[in-house]
Length: 485
Image (cartoon, rainbow, N blue to C red; front, side, top):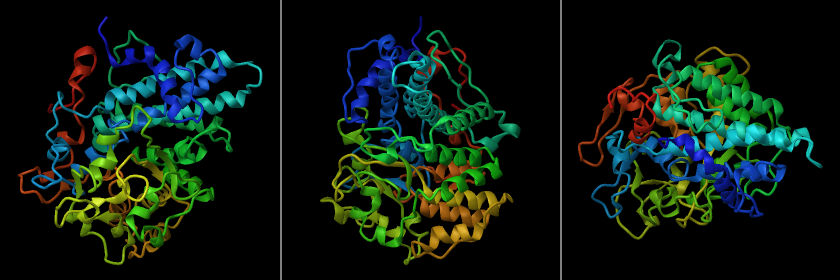
């Protein structure tokens, strides 16, 4: 039988159980079969913990999911011809992606999808086990449902045109996989079907998780799935699928929880001491993040975000003057960009996002990658209410909360105003490219490197859907490649 990505699940749970040692304080056993691992609550629990580890891969939140989606916008540039040009990130900036040279997210994300599904499908093995309640099993299931939904969400955003591309989102998305089936060669579902599956997983997760549940033994509380992470991802998924009232409602749930607080201008006084460089988060603005740790075998480390974005290391991925120009002098968020004085090489006039300087006084190492933040919830609600007439909040007030806390002039709660505030607030967190797609906006940038890079990508271009890896097309006869590749 031909090998395909769904066969990875044969060993996925055994491997991921081993990787769970980087997520838990207690190291799990490594020499167990899938059958044995998934036969007890302890094994299922550790396997669920292991499903988090691949999120830190350089194929995903450990590097490429951020860099690919920043460097092909007006936010980022490859530092060609400078001392920071190590030869990395070239394709990210040039946008010359091919099926033979595309992002490797596909395999990593489906690895998590199949592994999480395996845990879900075997939870019944622990029913009736001494000391294990139905709620204990539901909490694990909710975590896995969230991780499966997040993986499908990032896949469909990467390899398919945005939801608004066709009537009823009837164009091709990615395969929806809910169970391990080594003999399967799945077809691509429509984008609507993918979003329906994402939302179904998240709404079930919300309904079954204990409101007080947080995985025991985690190094960073914000890196574990809880009810607020589920609700925040639902708010974003509803926004992307143009279900405006539900987007506003779920953003409100997170905002009104009282669990989180907005960062202020004083938090950004010095880049290396900003909350982005903190090792852990609990109760501040971070709702969910991917925890970086050197001993996680998935972590990119030397090729990870901290080294790609920090001028004290490779520093290949820089921020543009075009991005710097959208901030007022009084806007504290401008302090989140550093120059070459933070390194020992020279690139005058170049800036880097300090969101990935690394943990601990700006020393390049590993870094956490924030996935969901409170400020995004305010911006989601402002968009749903201010542009699409959802009810339940004052969009102007939401815009003020985000801008005034950092000393910036609030933008109007209009399409252009909200787009600008999102560009400022969420810069270098992997949002802008998808925002352009879902709002039917062209990408226009200045070639600050003088290399003739693509400066304009019209909305609807093939580039808004990356090519599916050629290796997957070859092994799955039911997969159809994206148009233009």
